Image 1 (tube, rainbow, N blue to C red):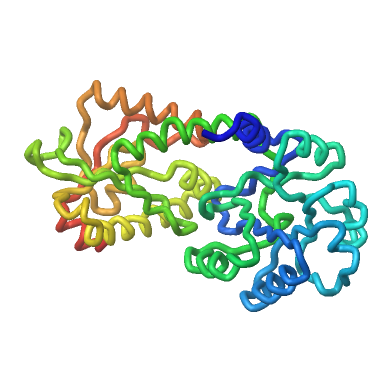
Image 2: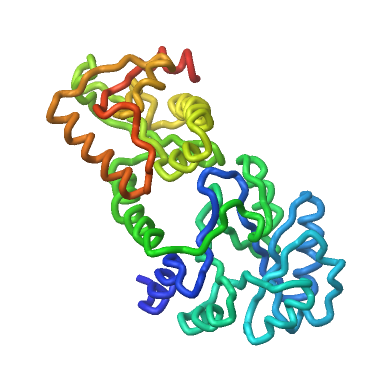
Length: 336
């Protein structure tokens, strides 16, 4: 278990205390990349790697290292801070304007010190990239991370260039807690496979050892249940309904690949989803089935709670959930 001080600091950062950054638009493939630079060697390596990749980043420099640097050498990159913020005015001179982003502090007192100087701390390091996320990457790991970002459809930019960049709020802390306590726990308990690595991927799939009603299959038949990556689809839908729909269709091909490659899905005889957004699935070839009334009410309540949790303001076109399904062979014929 993490020390209480670490838990409190992480919570304060996620809630945006002292103006700590949270991230940007949850449906945009640009991610804010920051690189801690602790030596001249780090700087040379980072600049070389970024130049080769055609990318720019926020370079987190200590005021002592920045003192002897030429501004032209950092052209195209954002200057951020690392270490004691008392030296921030020196970084302002190097940057040619006010520095706003500072490395993640290691204690609550340091976070408060950044806030009093109008500096925004970076959030805790993310486990993996996500649209609008802020990533901090050491120079040694930079080549591999940049290659992964490009492969997954992300674009690395300085923190200042992340669309809709904002500080955290108490709602962000609530959402983080909800995700860890509800969605992540559900995923572990039910073996949900996350297929949302790409910037525009929105699908997860859970192997089931039974066929729930009203699927027209024996109860003992193995199936695969589709789940949406809720934050991702909300972010994409906020850009446009068409963007979200196209991402949904592309993600069905991820499911098709998983059906063929993942051992836990080899016995699945059908793919199904219980959803309010059943019209697009019908257009995609799925057969729609009415749920038993009590089941439909239960799922409807769950979907309303999800909308509240993720702040979705756009009401779905349907208010009654249905089950959409395809037999395995037909699904693979279309999306395999």
